[in-house]
Length: 129
Image (tube, rainbow, N blue to C red):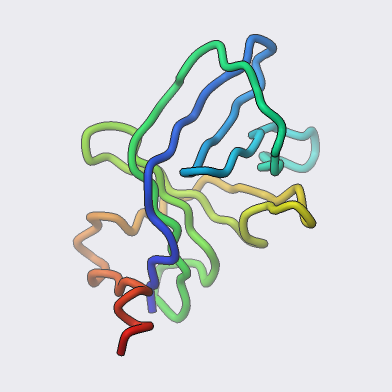
């Protein structure tokens, strides 16, 4: 089953010191690469001065379970071009105020507009049923 948990607009920006910032609607995460660990998202409630905007577009957060050829976990997809998507696995979810650091892993498991997967069900429709 594929459930859309959240969707909206994202922005990927960079500070003058080279720190990447991922904005998902009203939440901000620093995106860093930690040696021997990999890429991490770090929850941030502090204001940042952005130097450059690297990318912007739509995003979707999916909860995936029991789907062939897809990992059973959270998937974050961001639009990286006109209707082109990059997908990331979030094995332990998105960071928050309590658990401030979480792994983000790039993957080729793209769900959005992939004809080999059935259309995901929207969580809002599931709640009304």
